[in-house]
Amino acid sequence: MQTSLPVLEDALRRAETRLTEKLGESITISLRSYLDERLIQKITAIDHEKFRSELWYSSEELMEKSLKKDFICLILHINGEPSAFLYGYDDEFDSHWFFLDEIATKQEGKGIGKVLIVLLLVYCFELDYTFVTLYTEDQDEKGRRLRAFYEHLGFTYMGTEPELGVVMKYKINEEELIKLYNRVMYSEGGPHPPYLRP
Image 1 (cartoon, rainbow, N blue to C red):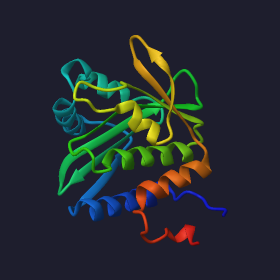
Image 2: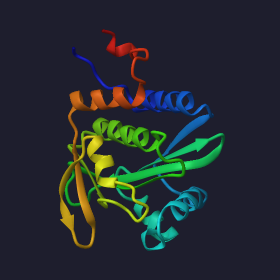
Image 3: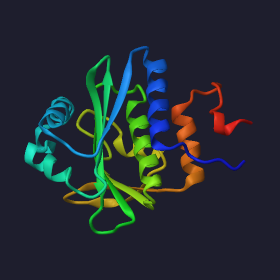
């Protein structure tokens, strides 16, 4: 079956619908190509709640990251309150690689992180990136199996760097990304997306 991914704007709307249905609360996702002080405050509030202090970035570091090529920040609100974010940008060492710098969500185990990552992958596909990379841990101090989480989404293990941690890579392939998109954005047994009718 020949299909194609939706454009990012349509994927964003589907993500909001999917999570609103799943969580039973009003979900909105905003996309930003820059950071200002207000957005940095939203990010750091979530960041400081979810991560240990040695992993926090300063406002200056976040502002510097937002100036990188193809920077994107997705912020998810639940009933108007910031609840999750993801941001990344072009890997300055290779123009075919995109770097997913950080993702955090207050509510875990609800599929929010998966949805944000899929949106990022759609964005990278639109910009013709070949790979998405990130650094993580096998398991964090709270027992979350982070490497396994990314592997479940199609990322592969590239090795462990002493200073950076576990290095993961996602090779962008349209056919595989469509499968991942449909798995994450549509419930099992639910309606087929309009561009994937059986």
